[in-house]
Length: 258
Image (cartoon, rainbow, N blue to C red; front, side):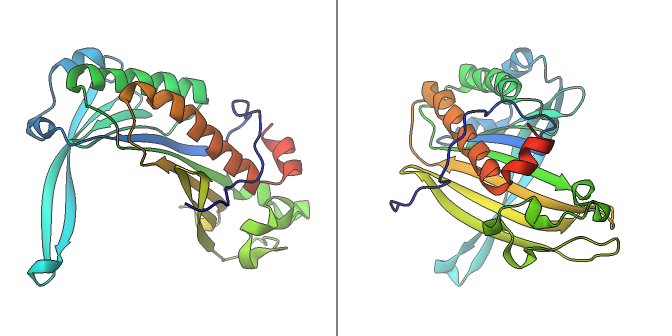
Protein backbone atom coordinates (compact mmCIF):
# COMPACT_ATOMS: atom_id res chain seq x y z
CA UNK A 1 0.00 0.00 0.00
CA UNK A 2 1.00 3.61 -0.49
CA UNK A 3 2.08 6.12 2.10
CA UNK A 4 -1.10 8.23 1.97
CA UNK A 5 -3.23 7.16 4.90
CA UNK A 6 -6.79 8.38 5.59
CA UNK A 7 -8.90 9.76 7.13
CA UNK A 8 -6.64 12.69 8.01
CA UNK A 9 -8.06 13.22 11.53
CA UNK A 10 -8.80 10.82 14.40
CA UNK A 11 -11.44 11.39 17.05
CA UNK A 12 -11.66 10.37 20.70
CA UNK A 13 -15.43 10.01 21.23
CA UNK A 14 -15.98 6.70 19.45
CA UNK A 15 -18.77 5.38 21.69
CA UNK A 16 -20.99 8.34 22.42
CA UNK A 17 -23.34 8.88 19.48
CA UNK A 18 -26.83 10.04 20.36
CA UNK A 19 -29.33 8.87 17.71
CA UNK A 20 -26.70 6.95 15.76
CA UNK A 21 -27.91 6.67 12.12
CA UNK A 22 -26.64 3.07 11.79
CA UNK A 23 -29.21 0.87 10.02
CA UNK A 24 -27.01 -2.22 10.01
CA UNK A 25 -23.68 -3.25 11.51
CA UNK A 26 -21.82 -6.45 10.72
CA UNK A 27 -18.52 -8.19 11.35
CA UNK A 28 -17.20 -11.05 9.21
CA UNK A 29 -14.19 -13.13 10.23
CA UNK A 30 -12.70 -15.46 7.60
CA UNK A 31 -10.50 -18.50 8.21
CA UNK A 32 -9.20 -21.58 6.35
CA UNK A 33 -12.24 -23.67 5.24
CA UNK A 34 -13.60 -26.14 7.78
CA UNK A 35 -15.22 -28.58 5.38
CA UNK A 36 -17.28 -30.48 7.94
CA UNK A 37 -19.48 -27.37 8.36
CA UNK A 38 -20.81 -28.08 4.86
CA UNK A 39 -22.13 -31.42 6.17
CA UNK A 40 -24.13 -29.84 8.99
CA UNK A 41 -23.73 -27.61 12.01
CA UNK A 42 -22.43 -29.23 15.19
CA UNK A 43 -25.26 -29.69 17.75
CA UNK A 44 -23.07 -28.18 20.50
CA UNK A 45 -23.55 -24.79 18.87
CA UNK A 46 -27.22 -24.79 19.86
CA UNK A 47 -26.31 -25.21 23.53
CA UNK A 48 -23.62 -22.55 23.44
CA UNK A 49 -25.81 -20.05 21.58
CA UNK A 50 -28.92 -20.18 23.76
CA UNK A 51 -29.42 -16.43 23.21
CA UNK A 52 -29.83 -17.21 19.48
CA UNK A 53 -32.58 -19.86 19.57
CA UNK A 54 -33.94 -19.49 16.02
CA UNK A 55 -31.92 -21.65 13.61
CA UNK A 56 -32.20 -21.68 9.82
CA UNK A 57 -30.22 -23.33 7.05
CA UNK A 58 -29.53 -21.04 4.11
CA UNK A 59 -28.36 -22.34 0.73
CA UNK A 60 -25.96 -19.82 -0.81
CA UNK A 61 -25.01 -19.91 -4.47
CA UNK A 62 -21.42 -19.29 -5.52
CA UNK A 63 -20.65 -18.66 -9.19
CA UNK A 64 -17.20 -18.96 -10.77
CA UNK A 65 -15.99 -18.65 -14.36
CA UNK A 66 -13.54 -21.32 -15.47
CA UNK A 67 -11.44 -19.40 -18.02
CA UNK A 68 -9.40 -22.48 -18.93
CA UNK A 69 -12.56 -24.29 -20.06
CA UNK A 70 -13.84 -21.71 -22.58
CA UNK A 71 -15.34 -19.50 -19.86
CA UNK A 72 -17.48 -22.28 -18.42
CA UNK A 73 -19.70 -20.99 -15.60
CA UNK A 74 -19.55 -23.20 -12.52
CA UNK A 75 -22.30 -22.83 -9.93
CA UNK A 76 -21.92 -24.31 -6.45
CA UNK A 77 -24.55 -24.42 -3.71
CA UNK A 78 -23.18 -24.27 -0.19
CA UNK A 79 -25.02 -24.26 3.16
CA UNK A 80 -24.83 -21.53 5.78
CA UNK A 81 -26.34 -21.80 9.26
CA UNK A 82 -28.06 -18.77 10.74
CA UNK A 83 -28.68 -18.44 14.50
CA UNK A 84 -30.98 -15.52 15.35
CA UNK A 85 -32.34 -13.91 18.50
CA UNK A 86 -36.08 -14.06 19.16
CA UNK A 87 -36.38 -10.42 18.09
CA UNK A 88 -34.54 -11.31 14.83
CA UNK A 89 -32.52 -8.11 15.23
CA UNK A 90 -29.27 -10.04 15.72
CA UNK A 91 -27.93 -13.06 13.89
CA UNK A 92 -24.77 -15.16 13.67
CA UNK A 93 -24.08 -16.97 10.40
CA UNK A 94 -21.62 -19.85 10.09
CA UNK A 95 -20.10 -21.03 6.80
CA UNK A 96 -17.22 -23.36 5.96
CA UNK A 97 -14.87 -20.40 5.52
CA UNK A 98 -16.32 -17.54 7.54
CA UNK A 99 -18.34 -16.41 10.55
CA UNK A 100 -20.59 -13.33 10.39
CA UNK A 101 -22.38 -11.44 13.15
CA UNK A 102 -24.86 -8.74 12.15
CA UNK A 103 -27.49 -6.54 13.76
CA UNK A 104 -30.21 -4.25 12.43
CA UNK A 105 -30.64 -2.62 15.85
CA UNK A 106 -27.33 -1.05 16.79
CA UNK A 107 -27.20 0.41 20.29
CA UNK A 108 -23.49 0.90 20.97
CA UNK A 109 -20.12 -0.56 20.11
CA UNK A 110 -19.78 -2.18 23.55
CA UNK A 111 -23.11 -4.02 23.17
CA UNK A 112 -22.27 -5.04 19.61
CA UNK A 113 -18.91 -6.48 20.70
CA UNK A 114 -20.49 -8.31 23.64
CA UNK A 115 -22.91 -10.19 21.38
CA UNK A 116 -20.29 -10.74 18.68
CA UNK A 117 -17.81 -12.15 21.19
CA UNK A 118 -20.31 -14.65 22.59
CA UNK A 119 -21.10 -16.03 19.13
CA UNK A 120 -17.45 -16.06 18.04
CA UNK A 121 -16.28 -17.83 21.21
CA UNK A 122 -18.93 -20.53 20.70
CA UNK A 123 -17.64 -21.06 17.17
CA UNK A 124 -13.98 -21.21 18.27
CA UNK A 125 -14.84 -23.66 21.08
CA UNK A 126 -16.52 -26.09 18.69
CA UNK A 127 -14.47 -25.71 15.48
CA UNK A 128 -11.10 -24.23 16.62
CA UNK A 129 -9.88 -22.67 13.35
CA UNK A 130 -6.05 -22.48 13.21
CA UNK A 131 -6.00 -18.73 12.46
CA UNK A 132 -8.03 -15.98 10.84
CA UNK A 133 -7.27 -14.83 7.30
CA UNK A 134 -9.42 -11.69 7.00
CA UNK A 135 -11.55 -9.39 9.14
CA UNK A 136 -14.28 -7.08 7.81
CA UNK A 137 -16.35 -4.68 9.88
CA UNK A 138 -19.17 -2.82 8.16
CA UNK A 139 -21.42 0.05 9.21
CA UNK A 140 -24.33 1.21 7.06
CA UNK A 141 -25.26 4.76 8.09
CA UNK A 142 -28.40 6.30 6.59
CA UNK A 143 -29.27 9.96 7.17
CA UNK A 144 -32.88 10.48 6.16
CA UNK A 145 -34.74 13.28 4.41
CA UNK A 146 -36.11 14.77 7.63
CA UNK A 147 -32.68 16.33 8.07
CA UNK A 148 -33.00 17.90 4.60
CA UNK A 149 -36.31 19.70 5.30
CA UNK A 150 -36.84 22.31 2.51
CA UNK A 151 -38.37 24.70 5.06
CA UNK A 152 -35.11 24.81 7.00
CA UNK A 153 -33.29 26.69 4.27
CA UNK A 154 -30.43 24.22 4.76
CA UNK A 155 -28.56 22.84 1.76
CA UNK A 156 -26.69 19.56 1.59
CA UNK A 157 -23.45 21.56 1.92
CA UNK A 158 -24.48 22.39 5.49
CA UNK A 159 -24.45 18.68 6.33
CA UNK A 160 -21.80 16.89 4.24
CA UNK A 161 -18.16 17.85 3.68
CA UNK A 162 -17.42 19.04 0.10
CA UNK A 163 -15.19 16.05 -0.74
CA UNK A 164 -18.24 13.75 -0.47
CA UNK A 165 -20.78 15.85 -2.39
CA UNK A 166 -19.70 15.38 -6.01
CA UNK A 167 -22.13 17.31 -8.26
CA UNK A 168 -24.56 17.87 -5.35
CA UNK A 169 -22.68 20.73 -3.65
CA UNK A 170 -25.10 23.46 -2.56
CA UNK A 171 -28.18 21.39 -3.52
CA UNK A 172 -31.37 22.07 -1.57
CA UNK A 173 -34.08 19.42 -1.65
CA UNK A 174 -37.50 20.57 -2.79
CA UNK A 175 -40.72 18.66 -2.12
CA UNK A 176 -40.83 16.88 -5.51
CA UNK A 177 -37.10 16.46 -6.13
CA UNK A 178 -36.01 13.28 -7.91
CA UNK A 179 -32.25 12.88 -7.85
CA UNK A 180 -29.65 10.29 -6.85
CA UNK A 181 -25.86 10.21 -6.76
CA UNK A 182 -23.56 7.51 -5.38
CA UNK A 183 -19.80 7.01 -5.47
CA UNK A 184 -17.15 4.71 -4.06
CA UNK A 185 -13.85 5.56 -2.38
CA UNK A 186 -11.07 3.13 -1.45
CA UNK A 187 -8.56 4.30 1.16
CA UNK A 188 -5.67 2.99 3.25
CA UNK A 189 -6.21 3.42 6.99
CA UNK A 190 -2.76 2.05 7.81
CA UNK A 191 -0.23 -0.19 6.10
CA UNK A 192 -2.36 -3.36 6.53
CA UNK A 193 -5.90 -1.96 6.78
CA UNK A 194 -8.14 -0.54 4.05
CA UNK A 195 -11.68 0.78 3.77
CA UNK A 196 -14.23 0.75 0.99
CA UNK A 197 -16.72 3.62 1.36
CA UNK A 198 -19.93 3.78 -0.67
CA UNK A 199 -21.60 7.15 -0.22
CA UNK A 200 -24.18 9.45 -1.78
CA UNK A 201 -27.91 10.05 -2.18
CA UNK A 202 -30.59 7.46 -2.86
CA UNK A 203 -34.35 7.01 -2.54
CA UNK A 204 -35.61 4.81 0.26
CA UNK A 205 -38.62 2.54 -0.27
CA UNK A 206 -40.91 5.51 0.28
CA UNK A 207 -40.62 7.33 -3.10
CA UNK A 208 -40.70 10.72 -1.38
CA UNK A 209 -37.94 9.94 1.09
CA UNK A 210 -34.37 11.00 0.34
CA UNK A 211 -31.45 9.68 2.34
CA UNK A 212 -27.70 10.06 2.41
CA UNK A 213 -25.74 6.80 2.59
CA UNK A 214 -22.40 6.21 4.31
CA UNK A 215 -21.64 2.50 3.88
CA UNK A 216 -18.17 1.75 5.25
CA UNK A 217 -16.37 -1.60 5.15
CA UNK A 218 -13.04 -1.64 7.03
CA UNK A 219 -10.99 -4.76 6.34
CA UNK A 220 -7.59 -6.39 6.65
CA UNK A 221 -6.26 -9.59 5.08
CA UNK A 222 -3.49 -9.95 7.64
CA UNK A 223 -3.21 -13.50 8.98
CA UNK A 224 -3.54 -13.41 12.75
CA UNK A 225 -4.01 -15.65 15.77
CA UNK A 226 -7.70 -16.04 16.59
CA UNK A 227 -7.04 -14.79 20.14
CA UNK A 228 -6.06 -11.31 18.89
CA UNK A 229 -9.18 -10.69 16.81
CA UNK A 230 -10.86 -8.31 19.24
CA UNK A 231 -7.79 -6.14 19.71
CA UNK A 232 -7.82 -5.45 15.97
CA UNK A 233 -11.61 -5.04 15.82
CA UNK A 234 -11.44 -2.16 18.28
CA UNK A 235 -9.03 -0.36 15.96
CA UNK A 236 -11.13 -1.07 12.86
CA UNK A 237 -14.24 0.24 14.59
CA UNK A 238 -12.37 3.45 15.39
CA UNK A 239 -11.37 3.78 11.75
CA UNK A 240 -15.02 3.40 10.68
CA UNK A 241 -16.05 6.07 13.16
CA UNK A 242 -13.32 8.42 11.92
CA UNK A 243 -14.64 7.98 8.37
CA UNK A 244 -18.18 8.86 9.48
CA UNK A 245 -16.86 12.01 11.19
CA UNK A 246 -14.73 12.82 8.12
CA UNK A 247 -17.86 12.93 5.95
CA UNK A 248 -20.27 14.74 8.33
CA UNK A 249 -19.73 18.43 9.04
CA UNK A 250 -18.84 19.17 12.66
CA UNK A 251 -21.68 21.65 13.15
CA UNK A 252 -24.30 19.21 11.94
CA UNK A 253 -22.80 16.33 13.91
CA UNK A 254 -22.77 18.33 17.14
CA UNK A 255 -26.42 19.33 16.65
CA UNK A 256 -27.91 15.94 15.73
CA UNK A 257 -25.64 13.13 16.92
CA UNK A 258 -23.40 14.24 19.80
